[in-house]
Image (tube, rainbow, N blue to C red; front, side, top):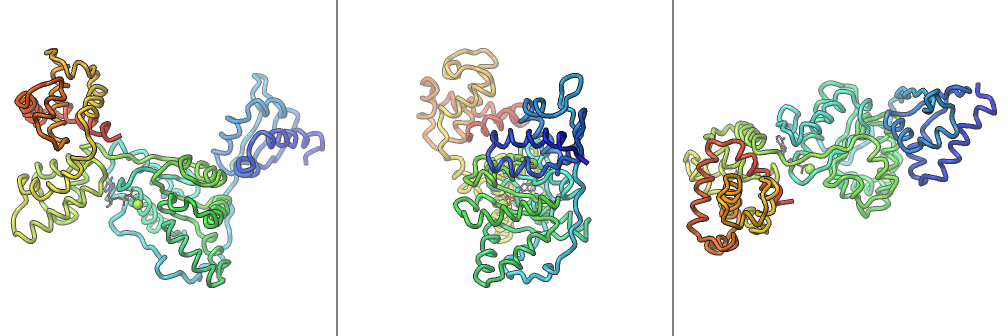
Length: 441
Ligand code: ADP
Ligand code: MG
């Protein structure tokens, strides 16, 4: 039992910080904390997860020291315990009639096994695996963000498959934000909203795709936020994908705080090596045998997103079928020309290339335009010329002029040299990838 005096200090602490943080923050982070025991020397707090503990320690250090017992080395003397997940009985809601269109089943190909790992997505894949392995017990929610076509939906479905196969009793649902909104509209119209609420709140795992579509949909936002809160409070797993990090979404403070509560993980564009592995894997899935130079060509030219790789493979596959030919690099180049040229002409300028080369190779832009024959400068200049020739759809004479008035034969010579070098020099190929990526950013 807590005595009046002892209760007072935790209560005072709460009073004090309530004035310091927003309602949403207090509601999200502080209200779920339970004070289990409080003595002169120590206080025992029960928190729903480790993130709340960290939030408290990081944000209210001073107030904790002021109002709560301290250790001899002047730290808050707090013992934390993590709340055990409550086992909620299954509700009759599992018979909930689903709106037929919303029953999004998982894409059979979007499994963890089919997701190729590389430095740009290793972390997010591990987080997804962690969540799938122990739903509700590690990062909750897991928030995955990144550009279009980088594998967010793939990972989301991967989690779904894994849970379906390994935790047979867990009830999970994968839904796009659009479908959630449609679902809500449908049930509002049919006056069956309670049924819907019960259904969502009875889930063990909720996988929500493309949360950015919730922006500017105020009424729907509140309902989804309530659903999140209800699930998180029961330690049920939520995974959310988005094209932006939570802080950049135009959503309420409360919703953003909810989404930032767990782990926010970024998924980036795979590096060339990973793209090569993905291309090989996707071609194999289609039963296609491409030679290494065709694979390299596709991977090298698909640098915006992974979906491009699939687009390229589909085109080549159709072409091979219709024309009854084996795909060579020359055929790949001509079939994909249109598709790749489109990307090649995207707003890339000589200045953009010079800037990026100067960063990656650590040489000054003035030197790139100059005449110096120092080895590192000459190489960086040749790379810039090679990229300008590859990426800019303009006359070579004009492009060459932008390099401090060089001739078009100097440009051609430089480009050839790099092309030759690229056949054997993996480091250079990596550096060039890096330059290309930086140009786009
Ligand atoms: P997003 O949801 O991020 O827009 P998707 O998950 O729909 O992207 O991915 C686009 C396509 O790229 C899918 O076919 C997916 O299988 C594929 N893809 C993306 N990343 C990888 C990867 N690392 N390994 C294998 N396939 C991938
Ligand atoms: Mg997607």
